[in-house]
Image (cartoon, rainbow, N blue to C red; front, side, top):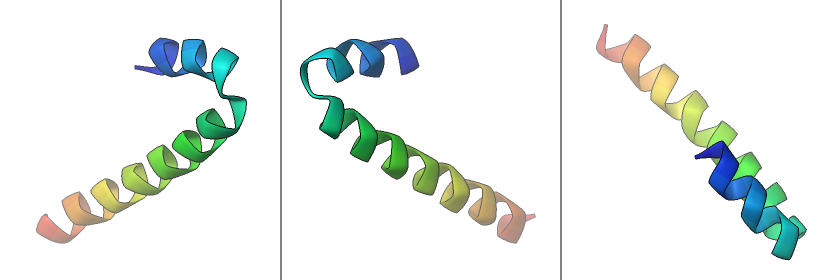
Length: 38
């Protein structure tokens, strides 16, 4: 997935930055969810 986003970054670097931030946020939420479920 990272590679695909990197290619898009060539056309829309700003969008890539936003996607990166959202990805990080999602990862954090998923981790918290997993911990909570545990």
